[in-house]
Amino acid sequence: MRLFESKTAQMTEQTQTVHTPFSDLGLRGSVCRGVAEAGYEQPTEIQAQIIPPILAGKDVLGQARTGTGKTAAFGLPLLHMGDPKIPSQALILVPTRELAMQVDSEIKKLGRYTPIRSQPIYGGQRLSSQIGEFEKKQPNLIVGTPGRVMDLHNRGVLSYANIKRVVLDEVDRMLDIGFREDIRKILGGVKRPAQFVFVSATITEEIETLSRKYMDDPVKIVTSEGALTVRQVDQKYISVAPWDKRALLLHLLKHEEPDLTLVFCRTKDTVDRLAQHLGKHGIEVHSLHGDMPQSKRNSIVRKLRSGHLSVVVASDLAARGLDVSGISHVINYDLPEDPEVYIHRIGRTARAGQSGVAWSFVSADQGKLLTAIELLANIEIAELDYPDFTPGPIPEDKRAEMRKEPLPDDTPNSRASGPEAVWEKNEDNIDPEKFPGGVVPSGPPKRRLGGRMKTRRGR
Ligand code: AMP
Image (cartoon, rainbow, N blue to C red; front, side, top):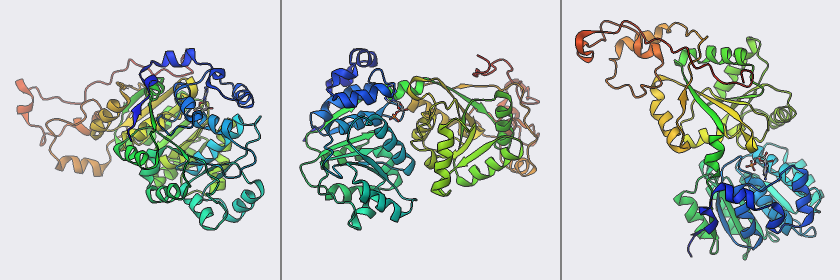
């Protein structure tokens, strides 16, 4: 069995989007009505490429990032092929509860003129009420996280007997989160023949192996749209010493008044502390992380959707798959260690062709990470000098550390020089041989005051 590249994968995005109206994809009228009502005028690249082979019953391995319309790409054919008389006929596995809710709501929206019923099942909600609803509704399509799907199956509530189609969404994330074993058990329990569709932002060797194991002569679709979506985001980085990050964020939020901002931190702890700090300084802020009760997370996502929030501080897991339009700014308060996560984060803005802004706080030691992100996103991220911000003094413990450590020959991040970190003049540390001609700098280079950032307000 061999994976082959779809011929259309070579085509440009323009060819795909301009010449393939939804009506040419072979979707039934009730589905097209839902699409029209959702306001989708033309299929995105992934939709144009993936819908025909899925409708033809083929197994498909598709590469598509969040924000490219991937949900409708697999959701529309499932609605088209759905049989309202058969419960649990298709299973969509997703990595997080937020994504389960979001995929389910997109399918409900697009399928509103079809008789096909969908239900999300995910952890964090009371099992008994989820089971009750499931038994009452007998959904045709199930959108679930692997753990909860296994749970309902093991309790005899969810039978795999009728499952004819399985979609794995964000396969790379599911494997990252550690759902390998659950996925193996679920896919292994589905009766053959069945149709499999895997969608992933990146297609790794492991994902290829997984598809070879379960799929029959699959079509592999590689799109260029992910990179294009990322390019629509106006990306900048701001050099900042770690101890100045809070002050800089507060300053940006107060001075720029962005419409709706998502601030990303690496840990739940930082999320909580940062949200508290901003709150104390008069910013109306909410936090979103995995340890919060599901009901609270749902209510924040609802408020976000209805445009009632302006600043949300979030962890990566909680914000996965968050599909909220109108997010004007994404701020990477902490740069993610994994460049892929950066792409996912900034994909929260510039949804479906809107413009968006992504700023990343970068400290002196994060140059390599920034370069890795640029390589993956295939874009040069320019530095933004924020003219009105005055960095604070270096905390005493940092000063002591810096006195101990000799200055590196080649600062890993000469571009992102947290100015004081490298330039604090300390006679003991300065090696005159590093400054030919004997001119030893007496302070940090002047901040460039030119490039005031573009914002909605300033445009
Ligand atoms: P997704 O990649 O599935 O997370 O979708 C990203 C966003 O694009 C969602 O807000 C969708 O509602 C929207 N979307 C999906 N398909 C289209 C389309 N053909 N035209 C315009 N917007 C779309």
